[in-house]
Length: 387
Ligand SMILES: Cc1cc2nc3c(=O)[nH]c(=O)nc-3n(C[C@H](O)[C@H](O)[C@H](O)COP(=O)(O)O)c2cc1C
Ligand SMILES: O=C(O)C(=O)c1ccccc1
Image (cartoon, rainbow, N blue to C red; front, side):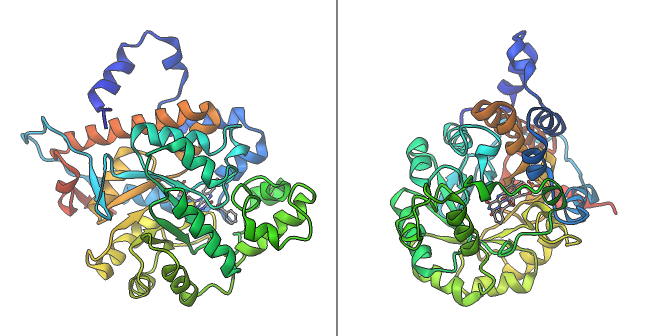
């Protein structure tokens, strides 16, 4: 990656350019700006969490239980943020999380984060419920690394079709999200009576799928509501068990990651069922309220997995310090969620690019000021638990 902290930081300091000053720097500023720009319902869809929002708060608060304890007088003149997953080297220790239905945030939909990620060499995980079909996202990303996230459909033919399309369009891993076979109790969205899928948004992959369309009475453009309800029904796969995961495992040659694990026993089961990676996630607190923070569940999962497969963490990552703390506790990488969603709403592709660039710069500076020169040197000795 050709972006480095010094250049990014000095560019910002030195720019007398008004345009640069117009875009936010902090997470809170992006969030506030998104709130001003968006209508209440789409903003609430991103901001909202399940129930009282306790899981969401716990995710963020968990990072404050740990402090970085820097070493000094270390040679940090050469810095390396790169990591390696499934034998592929990535320039930075984060990926963009799958976030669906991006047209509620920006008219470019998923094409904007996809392009920003590809431009900066950051892998992009495309949501199953993207507004733009996966083939179009693939085309816009060219050689950019992309993974496809799937809400496992009830219909095995549809599952096979999604897998086949993802493979054919150059996605290099499948992320199976297992924490959302039912939609959580989301009070903000209920208050706004807002579920964007019902009007056909976020249906890019379903409405272009030959298997899905073959099972509808009328084409999606003739009866959007019927088609959308059918897609949601496919996702409400409450019969999903490890057996269904085996089915997915058997029907793709790509690495399979399971997203939504917070219990070490599930991590072990996932490993036994042949997954290649685990994403410790509680969906940003959007599913189960009152649940354990992902950072709090990470150590037990790392202990259970014993380094056999990569463990990625999301939910609550806002800044460089959070990234380093997750890695110090055993994560191989993290996913960035809401920060880029707000940036997308504020400034489209440019906004997402800015968020990525700032996170790279901050993480690199944090690493150096901690006295470490590479992500490989980040381990438990970097942090202490303070409460
Ligand atoms: C608006 C929104 C839509 C999301 N859509 C998906 C999705 O389609 N698939 C998925 O696996 N996770 C989805 N997630 C969860 C994210 O992948 C990620 O787990 C979460 O955003 C992490 O929490 P954080 O944003 O608070 O850091 C969504 C999250 C948000 C905020
Ligand atoms: O909004 C979400 O968090 C999300 O990922 C989702 C989308 C559709 C059905 C279930 C969850």
